[in-house]
Amino acid sequence: MNRSAPGTNDVEGREFFYVETAEGEGFRQILNDALNSCEDLPMPQSGGVIEEKARITLADGSSLLAISYKGDVSGWRRKLAAYCESRGRKWGIASKHVMTLSDGLEIDLRNMSIFFDE
Image 1 (cartoon, rainbow, N blue to C red):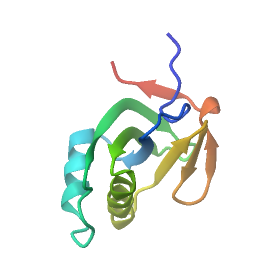
Image 2 (image 1 turned 180 degrees about the vertical axis):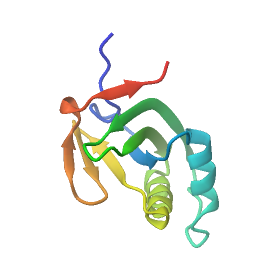
Image 3 (image 1 turned 30 degrees about the vertical axis):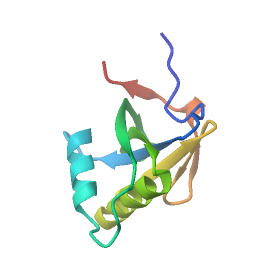
Image 4 (image 1 turned 135 degrees about the vertical axis):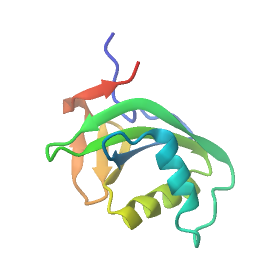
């Protein structure tokens, strides 16, 4: 079965976020660390985050985990982006086949190899 990368197709009310991970690091650890970091930023007021069970490897070898959230979309984005920036991690937002990375680079998701967890 061919599956497209999360964020290739927009879903109303949901945003697709990719976060750089270290070897052996999983979704729960990243989410817990993100929620407990950057205490000056308020917690998102509604909604939640899910793991999309997908990873992309960039040309430089960085591995990005796909997650998505709904509800307080801007609150989730602020919290996760601040966490990534405080840890020196790359991150990106995917929409309409394109992921825009935190460094401004744009990647066409249709041309990326994506690995899905079973």
